[in-house]
Amino acid sequence: MATMTGPPSIDDLRHRFLGALPVGIDEATIRFVDEECEWLMVRRGTVEPVHSSLDAGAMVTVWSNGGSGFAATADLRPEGIRAALAEAAWWANAVAGHAIAVDPPALTDRGSYHSPAGLPWAATTLGGRIELLRTVEAQLDIDPRIVERRASIGRRHVRSVLLAASGGQIEQTFEFTYPSMAATAASGGDAQTRTYGGSAYCGQGGVDVLDRFGFCDAAPTIAAEAIALLEAPNCPTGTMDLVVAPDQMVLQIHESIGHPLELDRILGDERNYAGTSFVTREMFGSFRYGSDLLNVTFDPTVEGQLASYAFDDDGSPATRQYLIRDGVLLRPLGGSTSQARAGLSGVANSRASSWNRPPIDRMANLNIEPGTSTVAELLAGVENGVFVHTNNSWSIDDSRNKFQFGCELGRVIRDGEVGEIVRNPNYRGVSSTFWRNLSGVGDADSFAVLGTPNCGKGELNQMVGTGHASPVCRFSEVEVFGADE
Image: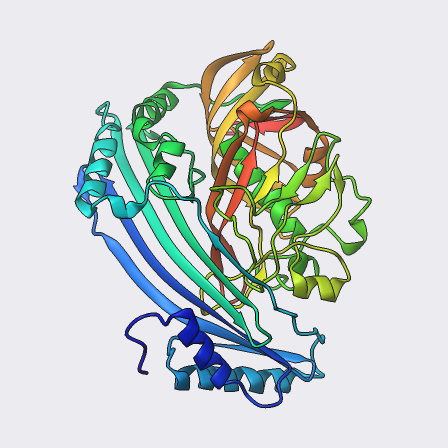
């Protein structure tokens, strides 16, 4: 199949799209995506092969006679777009009368979005980026017991253009940066790994993202904590208070709030693949999801957060919305199509991983709003507990209800004071019970804007980034245990 030698301009794309529209349809859109990626890693003093990629193509969607269909193509010539539109129109007419009828969107908005301006990666060279990683990775080599070490940076530049036959035009440009590092220490039959926040330290921007998360200064602490974990006792076992750092709250929010509130999952769309949800449509507006301290927002407007945007991939304007307020469940994570099916108000979260996938309901920026307690005040309320950092394992049932999470590092808390490091901290619970036991929420000083770069969902699978921000949080009466329990 012949393809374009370069991405078309918006004017060229619009001209080809409008000139290829099938006769008799109600509405059509084309969503063009152009993506450039680079992934660099230094591992044990060796530069791994550089991985770079370019990808471009378009998804067309057609609404006709109450049905809708879509088709994707990497052939952006007029004939390629015409063939994709014809296929999408065929599917729209084929399913009309056999699927839930959804009115075509009225896409007349014109708008744009750009990731926040910072120091662009274009201001650096490939050699300079590799040398930076060499320097950071070398700082992990502090002890002969460090048997594995790595430092890496991922970069993505994504341009998305959505055009509608009815006149809408949305252009969004994203710059993503994903720094990472890890050190593994081993002695005898034991090995312990400490990472740079798991994969949570990521965001929109350029070189400035590294400074935002202290990437260049973190290695000595990461390596020292890996050694300390080797020598640390196992996490104590019992029902106790749990204080959770933001880099672990990322996973807690993601798995036990984000996925359960996805409206397509509630409607049963994920049943055969990733399960359902304990949440039902009837719960919205009245169900007590957590304590009065729990306030959760869907907020794609946070500057620099991983999943910020102005419009979702269906063209709906993105605004800040409360999903849970004072502990009460208010609205689901459902885009325009799911809202129409369920008869519920949702949010602008129809998102696609690339040009060859249709948008589905996804988390974007899902954040716990700060409270009023300092970290010292949170700790002062703990007689016996554990302060946990950085996820390293997770398990949750297919209704996203019962869960068990493991963390890289814990510190015991006795009578309001943080004590020694413990290894292999784990905890388990039931989602609604756990959140109802939220007994303290940190203030803005403990609030961290983080994310998850690799959330998978859907058939065919789609991997997208989600943003999660949270302060330090305290939970009461949590079942905590070490790895040997």
